Length: 97
Image (cartoon, rainbow, N blue to C red; front, side):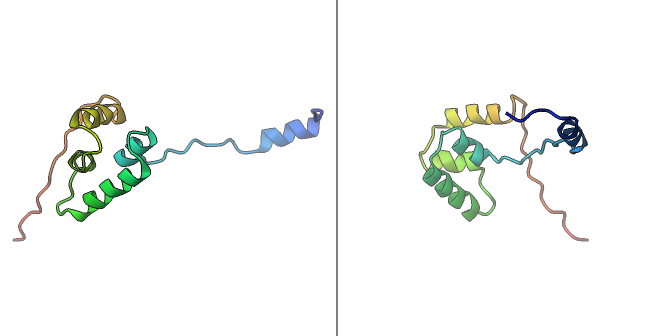
Protein backbone atom coordinates (compact mmCIF):
# COMPACT_ATOMS: atom_id res chain seq x y z
CA UNK A 1 0.00 0.00 0.00
CA UNK A 2 1.27 3.42 -0.97
CA UNK A 3 1.18 5.98 1.81
CA UNK A 4 -0.79 9.14 1.10
CA UNK A 5 1.61 12.02 1.03
CA UNK A 6 0.71 15.65 0.48
CA UNK A 7 2.33 15.44 -2.97
CA UNK A 8 0.20 12.49 -4.07
CA UNK A 9 -2.99 14.17 -2.82
CA UNK A 10 -2.23 17.41 -4.66
CA UNK A 11 -1.46 15.49 -7.83
CA UNK A 12 -4.89 13.90 -7.65
CA UNK A 13 -6.56 17.26 -7.16
CA UNK A 14 -4.88 18.85 -10.20
CA UNK A 15 -5.93 16.11 -12.62
CA UNK A 16 -8.92 17.18 -14.70
CA UNK A 17 -12.14 15.39 -13.83
CA UNK A 18 -13.19 12.60 -16.15
CA UNK A 19 -16.15 13.63 -18.23
CA UNK A 20 -18.89 11.20 -19.06
CA UNK A 21 -19.27 10.60 -22.76
CA UNK A 22 -22.50 9.64 -24.43
CA UNK A 23 -22.21 7.04 -27.12
CA UNK A 24 -24.76 6.50 -29.83
CA UNK A 25 -26.24 3.04 -29.64
CA UNK A 26 -28.34 1.94 -32.54
CA UNK A 27 -31.33 -0.33 -32.11
CA UNK A 28 -29.58 -3.30 -33.76
CA UNK A 29 -26.63 -2.97 -31.41
CA UNK A 30 -29.07 -2.77 -28.51
CA UNK A 31 -30.72 -6.05 -29.59
CA UNK A 32 -27.31 -7.69 -29.93
CA UNK A 33 -26.05 -6.33 -26.61
CA UNK A 34 -29.23 -7.57 -24.88
CA UNK A 35 -28.41 -11.01 -26.35
CA UNK A 36 -31.64 -11.05 -28.31
CA UNK A 37 -29.61 -11.42 -31.53
CA UNK A 38 -26.37 -13.24 -32.16
CA UNK A 39 -23.53 -11.47 -33.95
CA UNK A 40 -24.36 -13.40 -37.13
CA UNK A 41 -28.06 -12.50 -36.94
CA UNK A 42 -27.21 -8.87 -36.32
CA UNK A 43 -24.97 -8.78 -39.38
CA UNK A 44 -27.57 -10.52 -41.56
CA UNK A 45 -30.27 -8.06 -40.47
CA UNK A 46 -27.91 -5.14 -41.12
CA UNK A 47 -27.24 -6.45 -44.62
CA UNK A 48 -30.97 -6.68 -45.34
CA UNK A 49 -31.62 -3.26 -43.78
CA UNK A 50 -28.97 -1.54 -45.94
CA UNK A 51 -29.84 -3.41 -49.13
CA UNK A 52 -33.36 -1.96 -49.33
CA UNK A 53 -34.22 1.37 -50.84
CA UNK A 54 -35.94 3.08 -49.10
CA UNK A 55 -34.34 1.78 -45.92
CA UNK A 56 -36.37 -0.79 -44.06
CA UNK A 57 -36.61 -0.40 -40.29
CA UNK A 58 -34.01 -2.61 -38.62
CA UNK A 59 -36.65 -4.30 -36.46
CA UNK A 60 -38.66 -5.15 -39.57
CA UNK A 61 -35.60 -6.83 -41.08
CA UNK A 62 -35.15 -8.88 -37.90
CA UNK A 63 -38.77 -10.03 -38.02
CA UNK A 64 -38.65 -10.72 -41.78
CA UNK A 65 -35.60 -12.94 -41.33
CA UNK A 66 -37.42 -14.82 -38.56
CA UNK A 67 -34.88 -14.02 -35.86
CA UNK A 68 -37.44 -12.56 -33.43
CA UNK A 69 -41.22 -12.25 -33.33
CA UNK A 70 -42.68 -8.78 -33.84
CA UNK A 71 -43.92 -8.64 -30.22
CA UNK A 72 -40.38 -9.07 -28.86
CA UNK A 73 -38.99 -6.44 -31.24
CA UNK A 74 -41.74 -3.98 -30.24
CA UNK A 75 -41.13 -4.61 -26.53
CA UNK A 76 -37.38 -4.13 -27.02
CA UNK A 77 -38.05 -0.91 -28.97
CA UNK A 78 -40.08 0.45 -26.05
CA UNK A 79 -37.23 -0.35 -23.68
CA UNK A 80 -34.67 1.11 -26.11
CA UNK A 81 -36.62 4.36 -26.27
CA UNK A 82 -37.20 4.43 -22.48
CA UNK A 83 -40.94 3.99 -22.89
CA UNK A 84 -41.30 7.19 -24.92
CA UNK A 85 -43.82 7.25 -27.72
CA UNK A 86 -41.83 7.35 -30.93
CA UNK A 87 -43.34 8.52 -34.18
CA UNK A 88 -41.50 7.80 -37.38
CA UNK A 89 -42.08 10.19 -40.24
CA UNK A 90 -41.11 10.10 -43.84
CA UNK A 91 -40.16 13.34 -45.51
CA UNK A 92 -40.57 13.59 -49.25
CA UNK A 93 -38.29 15.94 -51.11
CA UNK A 94 -39.95 19.12 -52.28
CA UNK A 95 -40.37 19.45 -56.02
CA UNK A 96 -37.98 22.04 -57.39
CA UNK A 97 -39.62 25.13 -58.76
